[in-house]
Structure formats: C-alpha cells, structure tokens
Image (cartoon, rainbow, N blue to C red; front, top):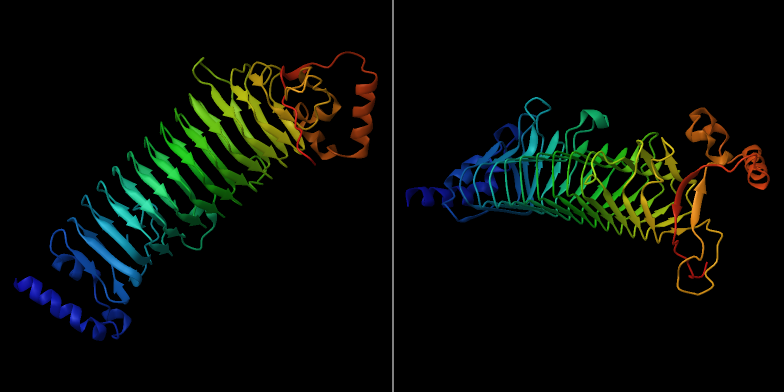
Amino acid sequence: MEKQALFKKIVIVMGLLIALPAHALPPLQLFIDLTPLGKTLRLLPGTYSGPAVITKPIVIEGGGEVTVDNEGEGTVMTIKSDHVVVRGLRLTGSGGSHDAMDAGVLIEGDEVLFEENRLDDVLFGIHIKQGNANTIRNNSVTSKPFAPSLRGEGLRIWYGSENLIEGNTFHHVRDLLLTNASANRIVGNELHHNRISMEFIFSPDNIVKNNRIGVNDTGIVAIYSDGLSIEGNRIEHIRNMGSSALAIKESSQVRIENNEILHNTVGLTANSPVFPENILYLENNRFSYNNVAMYFYGEKGGHIIHGNHFVNNLSTIAVSHEKSAKSNDWQGNLWDNYQGFDQDRDGFGDTPHTIRRYADRIWMDRPVTQFFRGTPMMAVIDFMERLAPFSEPGAILTDPRPLVDYSPE
C-alpha cells in the first residue's frame, strides 16, 4: 500500500518534473518498478530517461505522446518477462555498439505485444532474442544516420518462433534478419531504403505475405531456409548491380506465389536443386520491367514454374549452364513474346514456347557484351541469325502449354 501511495504522488507531480533540465529527466524505470504486477502504467505526456527494464507482466501506455530517451547509451528498453504490453511510445537514442547490439527494444520474453511505437536514432531496432509468440504490430523503425552497412537490423530475430510481425514500417535500417528462427509470420509491412529487405538464415517454415518492399539494395534472401512461403508481396526497384528481388540458395520446398516483381535488376536468382526435394514452386507471379526476370545457375533444374506472367522484361531468362532452366517444369506461363496461336480458344497456345540462344543472349556467355544490349547493331545481328541461322540455336527452356492473354492492351 505504501508503494502504491508513493506511486500516485509521483504521477501527480510528474507535470512539474518534466519541466526540469534534460539532465534531471525522470527515469522511466522508477515508474515501472512501482507498477503492480498485471496493472497498467499510463504515462503523462513528456520525455523520460532510459534505460528501462521490464521484468514483470505489465501494460505501458504512452498514447503517442511519451518519449524514452537513452541519450546515446546502450539499449533503450529491455523486456525480460512474458505477457508484457508496450504501446504508444517513442524510443530513441540508443548506443552505437554493434558488439553490444544496442537497440531500441530487446525482447527476451514470450507473448509480448509491442505495438504503435516509434523507434528512431537507434542502432538496432527491434531485437527478439529467444522470444516466442510475440506480436510486433504497427511500429515505425529507423536506424541511426549511418551508411547502410553500418546501421543495425531494423528487426532481428534470433532463435525465436511463432512471432507475428505485422503492419510495421522499416526504413533506413540495415536489414531484417532471421537466424535459426522458425514459423514466424511477416505480414503487411513496408520496407524501403534499407540494405537487405529480409534475410533468412537456417530459418525454416516462415511466412512472408502481403509486404511492400522497394528501393532497397537487395530483396528477400533465403539461405538454408526450408519451407519458406513468399506470397502476395510487391517487390520493386531493387536496382543495385548484382542484386535480386528474390535470391534463394540451398532451400527446400520454398513456395513463391502471387507476387508482383517489378523494375528490378534481377527478379529471381536461384541455384539448381542439389537434391530432388530442393525445388522451388513459383506460381502465378508477375515479372515485369526487370533487366532479367529470372536467373538460374547450376547444371540441372527441377523447379516447378507454373502460371507466371513475364511481360516487358529486358531479358526473360538468364542461365549459367545450358540445362539450368531447361530441366525446370515450365507450364502455363504467359510470355509477352509468344508467337503462336490459340485456335481452339482454350486459353493456351497450340504450340510450345521455346527460348533459344540467339545473339541477343550472347551476354550470358560474355558479360562484357552487356554494353551492346538493346543497340541497333545487336538487333541487326539477332535478326540475321533468326532469319538464316547456320545451325539451330540450343533451347534454354520450353513451355509446352503457354498461357495466351486476351486482355485488351
């Protein structure tokens, strides 16, 4: 009872305390310590000094008018309890140590709700360390004003499972990184002006759905991350040389469905399956206005590629080996340069669509010739080779049943 009475007195005089000079700002930790287990701490508008460590299940409400400033030292807020709710705060001024992983918030509990908060001038944004079933919703995260490679991750999940990352905005951070993190859902977020949009390392069974990703150095990267589902995302303007909107390596049973992949250097980069189960399923995606829609490397295919639309790409397919794409299962894709007919009007071409190694693809064997791509000289050479080839060029891929588009132009 004495603690509760003291707490009430502190809250009453807080309006006076926040008018004191910056060095005398009230510490948020004082109010957290005085909040009873399971109760709600509703803070008055103003600025509080950090750091704050939460070790019991409580609710903290800031109403969008509360700032916690750590003044450039360490992690601003650490949550070490399950069932904590933090809502409506601005967390700012973390330290700058990559070794210590100074962050806006470190979550080491389960079933935490962290929503409608703004994190800025923090090296790392939201760091979930061995935390499960947490909900991270409708937050805005910005790192420190460093070069992209020197920032911290906007979101970092290490050994965390079944977390929901929903409706957040991550901009001007380094990456979103999941390491040894399984069965998380990343849904409806916006990521822009970062280095790597999302990176999955040894992180199986995650869901990436309905996110808006653009103007980052690299898109979604998956390495040794099986069972990944990438669905309904819009990935655009990944324009760095050598970067891809999607890059999948040594990952089994990855499903890439109903995505829009637009205006990128490369839409998808994927290696050949090492084992039969290492296949990708690409269905109903739209690849448009990319320099290269898909790039496959390795000596054998096996990926399932059905019902995708390839429209207005500078090059549709690039390969490192003659069989890299040829051995994939191509079926029912729409190709903007298909020259066949659909006489029975069943929506599919009467003849297969085959992409061959004409002169316009010499750059795959001799990268230096990329300088001449799209020039009148190369167009003439390509026309002559198609008109009167000395020998039949080898096929890169064949879609036996290409989709025909009847929509008006």
